[in-house]
Image 1 (cartoon, helix red, strand yellow):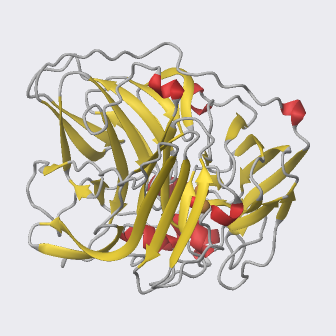
Image 2: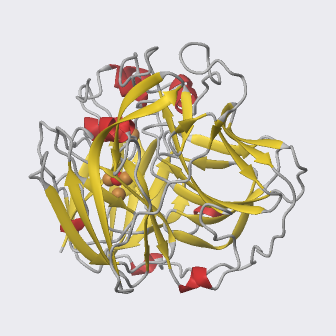
Length: 475
Ligand code: C2O
Ligand code: CU
Ligand code: CU
């Protein structure tokens, strides 16, 4: 398994349209080969279970996560070696309310070092679970913090230096749902597992014997690891039975590298109600939704016009992700309010500083501003020092010719503009990850309200492992 630097080809090939086309996923749907030969979708969509909160004190939420080895049955009669939290693949949903004190005891039962990062959850640097907070095989890590952010769909995943890609690929990821009073007062679908359903979307590649393949093909290092089998919540060919009512889906792009362009097979529109870190001010009606690795979106799909027996697919361009099978009519007391929350725009003039970051290639190094963090360069260098409490503009551009999802730990930001133009309405809320398209320039603004050392990086996990990651300290 290669986890080393992106090869020389990175720079030679990265200029053309081919790279972008592949990155957007022009794979034929379910090519012949391994896997079920059935034409129809057949696996019931699993609903990730809620993690048990062992606290009896309502102001606290206490969870246990064990990173462990497992065996999954993705194909009939074949077993696949995977990793999971408290199970074989993926993990349970941590769910907490704003104001609650969350404590998580993480045990590492793997044969290798790992870390667990709370992606999108605002916590001090030493609890962030990035590459500095390693958990040696056989040991455990405890942290505790108070949730102080709006309701939304966050997630957690392994984040060790140089091996984030393979560990997440094998299954080390899960959801972290945050609730608050704003959500309590909205009449949107919120019955978990019934009309409020998470969709963790991932793509994987398998050998004929059912084992996972990783970085086994030409250009995997260039584009990041993309598979030809689409999975949602850990199953291939998923189908979810729905009533003809409004359904809320919490979509997480948990793929290592694939960028999706979600749409419904009947071309009906849907409403996006939340971006990475919580509700948008107002629902945004969309017919397609682009999501890069690490990003989350909550959408409401209204199936009320559908008839019993209808099958509507969630697709990404030509690629089929999953099916919704309509059971029949049912009462629906939910509504989509015109206003969801209030988001105060951070004033550009309040920025103390503008920093510029460019995704770069260069003979043997893929990085940011021609710098990189990897096993060779180590973690001693703090690349940027930010004054705690300051507001800053971070301007990110691409100089490689392929798209990169830019993620900053420790803050929620707002997108000021893309190539000088205001972002689309569904990117006008709080974000922690933003896709920088080929040769694009994106400006973000954030207030740094957590102290400590944090990563910022490309969320294409193979790019990240190759060194497209730097760190800042807020103090
Ligand atoms: Cu989702 Cu630094 O990670
Ligand atoms: Cu993160
Ligand atoms: Cu990248």
